[in-house]
Image (tube, rainbow, N blue to C red):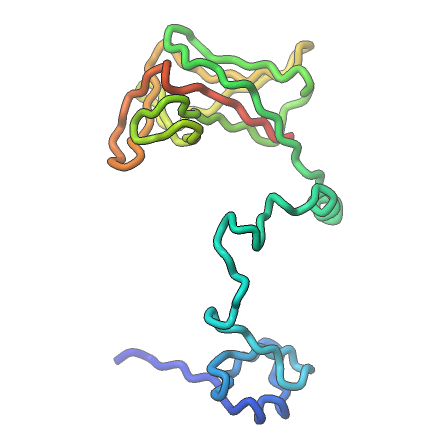
Amino acid sequence: MARIIQIRRGSATEHENFTGAIGEITMDTDNKTLRIHDGQTLGGFQLARADQITNRGNAGDGVFDINSVSDEFWTGLFERFGQHAPVQYESVQMRLNTATIATEYVFSEINTIPRNVRVVLECISPEAGYIIGEQVSAFGIGDRNNPQPNTYVDDKGLHVCLMVAKQQYWVNHKTEGTKTFITADNWRVKFYVYG
């Protein structure tokens, strides 16, 4: 038999005259919602049901977009925790060259090893179920899955190298999920550096 968990419950009026324990959850039987208690606030804090939220919105409709948060907010947040907000640099799109040992890009403005480097393939002509502008970060070269770029710094700046070893690039087909070799004319490689 399944176990049943039952929490303390009461009417809205009863809740307005009740102070729950710290972290206690109770049910408001009139409003069909939950209340969270902090051990000192009379009535606790009523949680809204999904049908009561009128401005939830969907991604991209302007209700809330994380990209609209100011740089000053993020900088302040990172500084408060003793960190620095990562700066993103991106390379130009580079042609997939399977006749070479490595694809390399030099970030002349960076002279230290960064926190993180990632490489993506960007579709420039529809192939393998992808459309123009879509980026794929899980891909392969030859028999290698998800190859990671090598980095080093010299007097020219940060070098980011992706070892190709004269092998062909592939992605998992977007809708079928099968390993699909791609053509250099339809894709470009791009590096992102976070420092």
